Structures are given as C-alpha cells and as structure tokens.
Image 1 (spheres, one colour):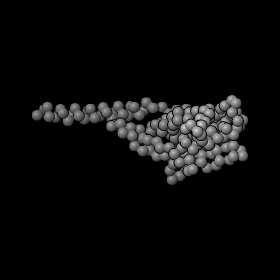
Image 2 (cartoon, rainbow, N blue to C red):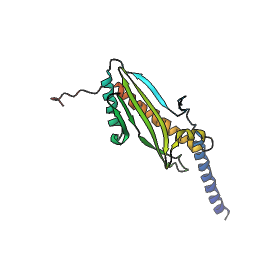
Image 3 (cartoon, helix red, strand yellow):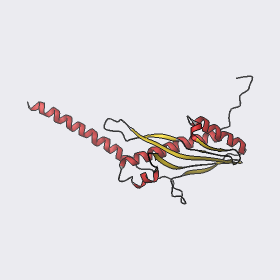
Image 4 (cartoon, helix red, strand yellow):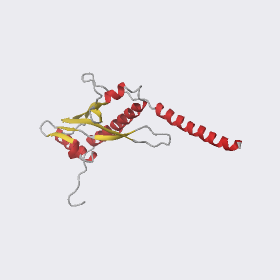
Length: 190
C-alpha cells in the first residue's frame, strides 16, 4: 500500500522539477541592449556601408532585387520606391513565439512589424530599421517591451527574438546582397 502512494508523489516531484527547469531556462534569456536613436528615442538599427567601385544605379538595382527576393510578398512590403532619390521604404513583419512551456512547446505570440529604409549614393548605401512594434489593435512599440522587461520576463524572450531576427537575418542578408554583384547569364548558354 505504501508503494502505491510513493509513485504519485514521485511523479509530482518530477513534474514540478520540469516546471522549475523550464522557468529557469526562460529566466536565463537576457534582454539584449538595443540601439536607440538619440533624437527620436526609438530603437533603430542603422548603418552606412561602402561598396567601392559600384555606381548608385547598380546599388539601387541590388536593393530592389533584395526586397523582391528576401520578402515573400514584396508588393505588400514595399511602400515607397523612389527612383529619383534612390530610396526604398518597406513595412515588413515577422512572427514571434512565446517562451517554451514545460514540454518545450512554443506558442504563437504575435507579429512584429518594422519600417526599413534603404537609400543609395555613389559607392555606398544606408539602411535604417525603426518603428518596431507588436502588431495589435493599437500601436504597441518595442520601447514599451524594454520598459516592462523586468515586470514581464516573456518580454526578454520577445526582445531577444526580435533583435536576433533583425541583426542575424535581415541585416546580414541585406549586406550580403548589396556587396554581391549579380551573376551575368549568357543568353545563349543557359
């Protein structure tokens, strides 16, 4: 009789240990230090990159090509394509997920939208990613996540995902596309 009571107790202890472990993993994620524009006080990723010996028209073509291949639906993303000022503005979005539960399952936590601007000049281009917000019924800027990161630990997870996607995916992919000359295809030998 005593052994039957010990089994449920052992299962409860093991289940409780799993919950503590999952919570510890969630708390281990630290909110990244995100770049903030001193004038607007908005989280802003921006840089000017040189691409030597490359004309402004070629860089604009590369930027346009990047928007058209990187985003699944570029016509929805691109809001402005100025061929005179050589500037493209887009409002893309991506999905984020909640911290994993006790079983390691991540749930949909919503959509993050941002504004990306790519402008080119002779031999260089500038990108700016700003106005990062959580798509909800009303505008919910990323700056609120940062303010409340200690109150809501899941915000650290959302900030980490957002920073990782922007720096490790969007920016790196853009930089690669802007530095890589398109392959010339011989019309007769394809």
